[in-house]
Image 1: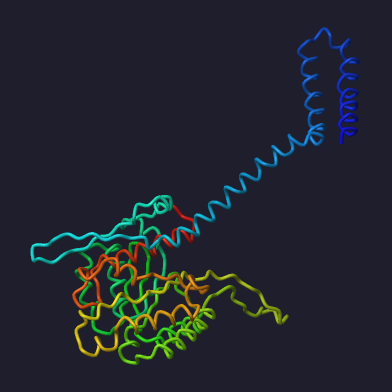
Image 2: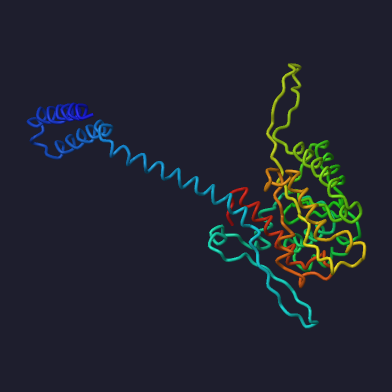
Length: 364
């Protein structure tokens, strides 16, 4: 290594001083031109010497690697922020009729603050969902999710106009929000088989929503009450969802060549709406209190994770953890031990919207 450095210095001396000496006499009358030539030759020599000095090379490479480390740090923070989305706390306001109205906010821990989660305004949510097709499918929990989403997008006045139609018992609901070109479909689908059929319908029509929220389990728990069968249905649903995810659409050329073209298709954003915390003592019928206890709820939830349907267990759907939210809100948030105040579903909506922001690398 030392010999290489010496050889480099000797070569640099020849390149630097010989031309300068030869040119010195001719350029002595023009000092500015002489200085410019000297500076140019010095820089050229410096470039050739850099490889012989490891400290310089390592300094340059370390600057490059630190930029790379910063980039990977952003990715790590992005992934960790998904796991912090449900870090929510609830507060209550006493009302004149001795009831309580809940409100919510993200916990102000250092990690959560770094993620910069936001309660989206009407304009923010409208911009995010502009031109989208949103499908929410499931039971009454899914319907309450739709109520909170539309309250955010439409405001209280317009919501009062449509609430009667939205709450028709065991029925679908469709709306097109003209101002932002968003189509929203609520599909009454209380059983797993309903969700599977819906997904296969999308596949057959080759038409996919941009945002798809689904969830079912309460009706199965009450009317079937068999966690193992529920698990089988979940795995069938998971297989259908994997088929739904469009990576590409293949179609035949019309030129008779028999070859195919592959056209990329955007994959939908998929969410699973979890079952709420069930407070057995507050359930309204003996049948519900008997069949929908904590042990059965846990058995159904175990099957959900075993099915590999959720991203949290390696699957395609991100869990909107209504159980965690409703458990944090507590008994003050429900009158029937199953359906909770709007604050719970409002939080779920904002978790979903912030998840969409993270997934698309957008900032408000």
